[in-house]
Length: 457
Figure (cartoon, helix red, strand yellow):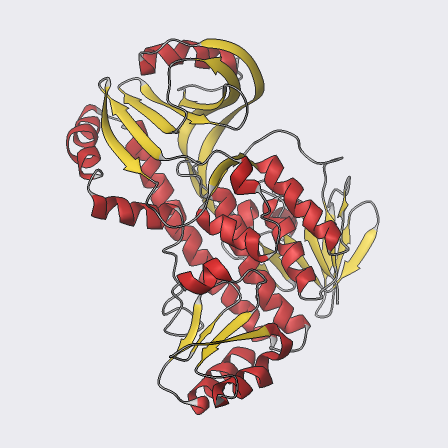
């Protein structure tokens, strides 16, 4: 069976690598004529780094990126909140999307795959057995993953609604080389009556990602606007030495009404679009890819029935809803529309965010290390298992049992075969390929058998 993947961004490439690791052939189609070279999405969260590590594409990305130690908020010319990151668990970095995509393409090549550039999807047809994609020529496959971004051709061709609302009229981004007196050890955001301004240090000499909101519509000179907004909103002066990339867009909140139509699935920005605040978009997309890939791999390899694929939406759409809610609230909070809202933000909410317990919770949400599928369609468990998630790197199931000859091992091998790793430990637990707890309970091979029968039926 062959899986067709529309879109060679981080989501599509992660899905392709995860499937090929499981012996599933893929064809990756992208409308662009070649790889992107600009940074675009910025920031590999600890959760995203774990996912990319499980397809063995992480390499030295964290070392080549900027490992930030703090996130600071300024209001009224003074710091009102500093989120310290040095003591937080997880390994992430500020690094451009193009670098992440290159690492994933290299891994795909190692696995025997490639990206077919210049393949614009113009039509999709399916029946109960296969999917045909028209992209210069008819291309047949058994399943299709639409990972082709917020303007997804696959989503439109499948007539899947994508409702949502705008969150900000216009948002400016630029990667610029600057000389100015700002600490490159972290991210700084200024909140003022006129709007917000943020600066992220990037790898490279004097390179920064600047962000700001700008009311209005229509085309603008992004660098000129940021040059004017910087002293007005930060109180600092800077010499602009050059610019690598700019973008101007409206921030939207959108969520696809369904993630599946027959043999066609949506993932990443094709399924959900939200504010760039807290940098969760790319990381949510690669999480979609991993979740769908291990389930689709089990179905294609004959270890599970197609009913398992319904749990993809059951788990991941709820994650997207939570991310959408959180990033929308953060956007409204950062922009501080209205005098009383700004006063509450600067004098009450931001000081509370300095509390260690609050910071720990914030980091768990932003990093997605606290993400859980508990009480989801696959049962009452589902919390991320940090020890397994951080240690195992090949995306297989892991069974922890007192000994290799424990009866639970024989049960798990009967259902999972070579897709199972076994390690010894005092308690019995089964961890999913995405690092989440699948099953845990009293020593009972019969109970584990029942759970695996329900999973694979």
